[in-house]
Length: 325
Image 1 (cartoon, rainbow, N blue to C red):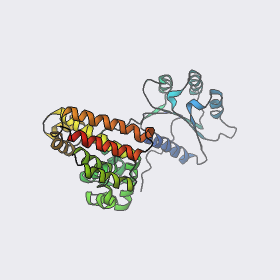
Image 2: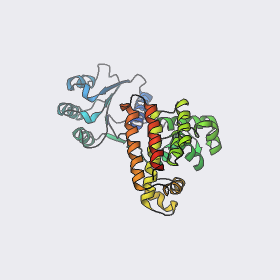
Image 3: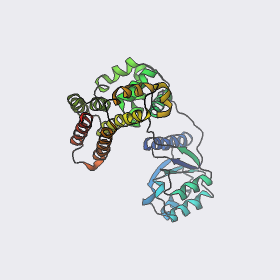
Image 4: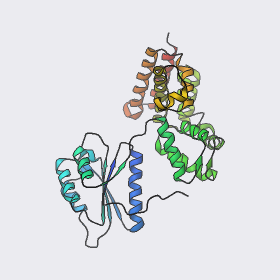
């Protein structure tokens, strides 16, 4: 039921720009799929730019005697040396018909020479900017559902994003599975049935209890989330998102959630919910909570020996900040 999208042969030079790894990986997969629709024997070769030397790359970019198709992917293209940029420049002047060269670049100033070179050489550009805002995640899920040929109600969309969290891989997987399981028409009841206890035991349930000052409820939700296998990073992200939301809504002052939605980049229901909580927080308390969520974000990504304990410590820190007078 999944839609295949564009089936035309891709241009021989491709540039994928952005920090959103999932979208970049998908862009590469889509390119390979399109090439293989015209030549099923095409070979995919993937190299980290800093780990391949220019002469070696030139060999991979040289057409074979039998004109066998290849897709050559240079990941982390922002790490390209001057010699590598020069090698790509030589190839870009006369790219081989049977080879697609893909440069995967994070964007930004680092390695800009290769970025500029690919653009000036006429490479097709695919942008994979990082998705950070709640409305962008909602748009992503909506697009995923449509990609699989389904439809989703606004209520179901809000519940699904809150239940799953910010990880695009999980959001994409959930959207695809729901389309398959519901026949393509996803409503709020269907999302809740599908996830059963997950929406109540997700990282957002932990965060909601913590910012409300509910110590017992936050710790209980955290333990259930860990038992259910919710990734540590998603719980940390949810905690940080809730605290940041309070700070943003608090700084915006009182106002109509519908009017503030565009300004703050979040749905009205979320603003309304935060407005009810932020009155119980002072700016200095929020500063303490923000510091705690920043610390746990690093902890769950490898700094802490025990990420579960780090999450518990962060939850207690947020609850403690909320309760400090």
